[in-house]
Amino acid sequence: MNLQVFEFNMLPTNTYVVWDEGREAVLIDPACYGPSEQQVLARFLTAEGLTVRHILCTHFHFDHIFGVPFAETLCNLYCEAHEGDSWWAEHNADEVRTFGIPYPGTPPVIGHTLHDGDIIRCGTLELQCLHTPGHSRGSVSFYCAAEGVLFSGDTLFAYGGVGRTDLHGGDYAELLYSIRTRLFTLPDATVVYPGHGPSTTIRTERNFHNI
Ligand SMILES: [Zn+2]
Ligand SMILES: [Zn+2]
Image (cartoon, rainbow, N blue to C red):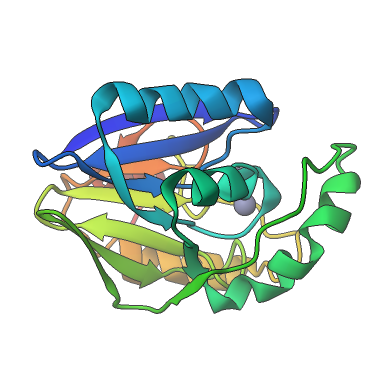
């Protein structure tokens, strides 16, 4: 698996591009805000000769989906997200204003709905969708068992961090339950790529959480 991370927008949010040897790619959380960040992403895809097969959203908070409409047009695809975040799809333009950030353009809708256990295929890559609610109702993580890699969105961060639960649909007990039962049951060596900040491993985070 090849992987590139970009940090986009004012909340700095990680956008991941992963691709196989046939240069078929998955875009996770296209968070680019405005034309210059959009061009950084577009130029990278072109330079690497990548064909994007899926636009995946770990959840539908505005900081993770700023670049979705651009990516959908660029790649001629609809984004994929869990329907548990349909409230966010309808309210992102209002919510972002409470952060003092103007919404760029029209917020996207959930194009295809993801379900727990879905397998997302892209060339030789396979990602499993794990429903990990708590940060939001529709938060999911994407797990690649063959590569030992997890994209955890805002569910789990490095150095003992977990996602905030004070926004709509957040639930702290549910978040910890998701982490314990769905993420900390993955192999120790699994590398975790969160929605914000640096990568970590399941072993490291289990130690931080003393589980
Ligand atoms: Zn979030
Ligand atoms: Zn976030």
